[in-house]
Image 1 (cartoon, rainbow, N blue to C red):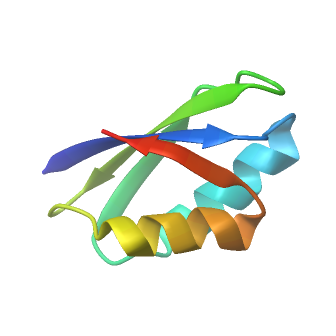
Image 2: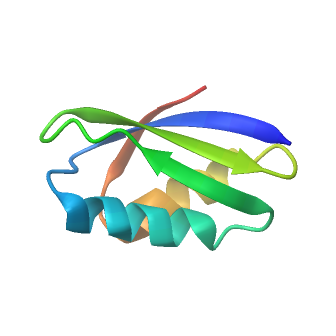
Length: 73
């Protein structure tokens, strides 16, 4: 198992969390997504997956949800 932390900018509420969670859980190998919402700021999103995530796929998924990735750790 691999854990990746993604900093996401622009989420403000529970619906935002749901949109990002839905997009990220759609990526191959993702087993869990945990969002620590910092409304209006940068929220850390912890993603647990079977293998390392493709950075471009992560950025595309978050973009599809309507938000921006500021960092992937």
